[in-house]
Amino acid sequence: MHQIEWKISDEPVPYEFALDVMERRAADIRNGTASEMVWLLEHPPLYTAGTSAREEDLLTPDRFPVYRAGRGGQYTYHGPGQRIAYVLLDLKKRGSDIRKYVEDLESWVIDVLAQYHIKGEIREGRVGVWVSKGHQEDKIAAIGVRVRKWVSFHGISINVEPDLSHYDGIIPCGISEYGVTSLVKEGIPVSMPEFDIELKSSFEKIFLQNGALGCITNSKP
Image 1 (cartoon, one colour):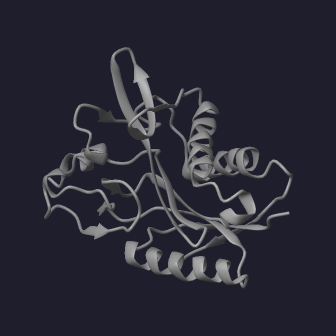
Image 2: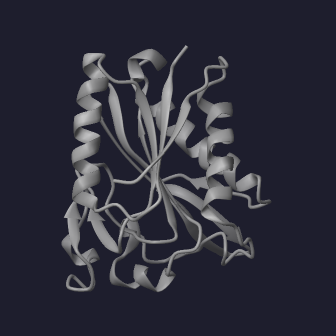
Image 3: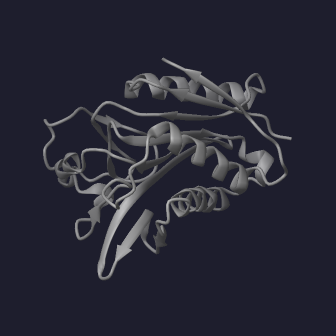
């Protein structure tokens, strides 16, 4: 049985504060002094640079704060209306398989979107989850993970109702020939609390097939 704390922050969380919380919690999970955690939150508008980020993909460096994230991937945007799920799990309890973990994150996003009759898809060589409309493909969710001593942190971000024009300041994930979308742009208006219910339900299907449940904690940083 894996006991997992679910933490929900109702106000935008400063990025550096979130990094500090994740670092400390990951260390406690490794030491066995804290439970695993899924943290649902939003950030103020900002750009993050993953370990593969190219400077030329940051088109307007003065538009929003830019942070080095330490996760895999390139540039991405975070801001209000985007649900971020930071996932801190002990992967040693799950077979020590990072590839399988990333596949589970992808499956989680796809299952959540399916609850809203949106078909999310993955593409070889393009990280994240995509929505197709004929020949047009738009990214609806980003995935960026970091694993240290088999404890994961960072996670996923899904566009619920962000200002999509904020993506204009970067080439998201280094891919310029595709666009970005959101649930609202796809014609699915949904509140963040409603969306969180679907996130937890789908997470339990993908990650907790043995029936272990976590506890939900609503909190403000």
